[in-house]
Image 1: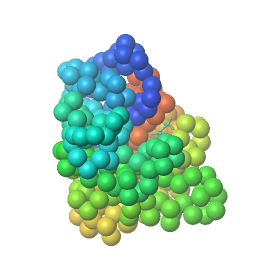
Image 2: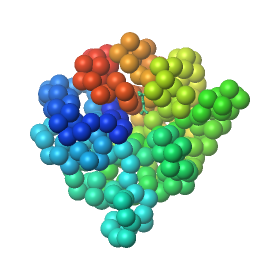
Image 3: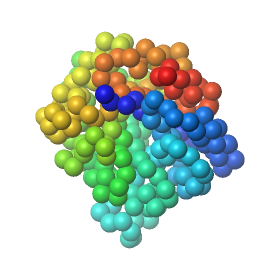
Length: 249
Ligand code: PGA
């Protein structure tokens, strides 16, 4: 049985007071024993302070440097080792906003995933098709190619999680049908089997992301091969984030 993972991606939101208050509110909710895992990914500016608060859940970064070294002349970058050193357990890589706005290719995403794994982090690798790709009937080949290109050979079910996030569903309030989600998640797992073998692929968690809300979470999270959610907007309000998590009790 794959344990579900409820993950929040705060993106570039929250100044210090707001971010610390949100993190504390999530930590309060997640104090007891839960039947699922929880992860929050605050902005890098707050990661260290939030990770230093008492908590029982995962705290992750939203990105790590692609640089081949843990330290060096890479102005503005923060390495996976530095993220780990702040107390983080996870990092996201390859979010569509980074693929689109920072020109990150599958090769870059894969290299970042390797750095994260080498540093001892669990990496959440994002994939997903654009609206034009979906409308052209190319969602499946696009996503499976991203899996082949972005998932490193050293990925295991413990150090890697996949997040399928259709780009057109992110922050738009639009969500794919449950049949479409099932189709892509099934194809992602089949591709993972080819890349990593059946054992690892069967255990690896595949999250759905893109406009997950309290009102649609139960349905989306009950689709076969959906092992959790990566939540953007709704992770910024503890009531909404927790209402999504609560569907999994
Ligand atoms: P959203 O974002 O929940 O606001 O659509 C999801 C994401 O980008 O990870």
